[in-house]
Length: 422
Image 1 (cartoon, rainbow, N blue to C red):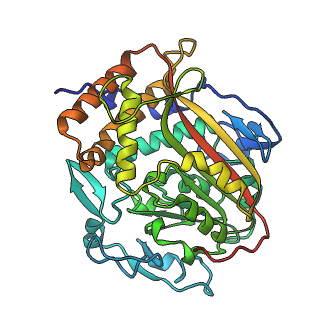
Image 2 (cartoon, rainbow, N blue to C red; image 1 turned 180 degrees about the vertical axis):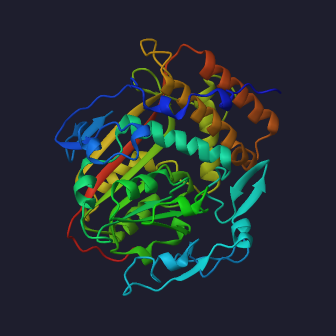
């Protein structure tokens, strides 16, 4: 069956990502501010420009708006290993504190680099985690970049507390970490906006592109967050994780670990999608993988959710974020936001808005990227072809509005001493 996809080469330019974008967003309360939309073309501008436009949300209320060196793939792993392209640029401890556990820093050679990947069903995937099943190739990196810019445009570059927390005139005094840094957009922006801050990115694969072009205050670790974060304890002022739950086996436990990683007075920011579809009134559109029939995009997502769970990933984290963080003794000033992004926009939305076309590229590329997970689950090529073909047609042609929901929580680490992570 021939699938009809958007031609990525005809998609809007990066500058189009910064245009105004009408979203179904409702704020129920306001007090704490979240920094507002940031133009993607202005990455080099001073972060003070981000402070000038801000939305608001009341704290405590809701708004709807390493193992010891790599060996063969599949080896038993523990967390305390860092891999860097420039070992001399970092300390011998992942935390930057010589009193912390010492780590074995090794340079990523071409041979080691190649061992981090595997080929499955025509796509390149990471070789060290069977839970995270999305690709690790150029097409996926482009999708992550577009996704980052869309989220940033709609929700703002940073939560407002981050700006004060990371400001410092002392080099290396403040530290930020991105768990599941993907293509590295977030760590690049943090490192540029806060040049005195030390920034760490953790992912299953190296950041793509020219590592030498990264800001000097950035270094990366190739690791699996499922193996633990003990080598990062009490080391960071900001901990960020966005859209990684499909590869996290126990998200609630990861929050317990993050409570040890972030320093008192520091900030955590977590954001996840629940992999469901919503109608124009923000009611969930139910669909299960028990049949192959309309609605097609919700149907495809139901198959994708099942494939994530089959691989050991988490599909419930988005719905649990607010409760887990609010009930955790280590966090206070908890802010929850839910934002609905259009899959099929409502009729009163500007149909020529460039962000709509970029959103469409992200969704259709996600379907292509999700194919290995569905095949691994045991679904036939014919079944997946049918789902994809009809979902693409629905997204391109349907007049029935559909939305996907991103849930975000950010909170401040208090001074409560918490016990060991079970």
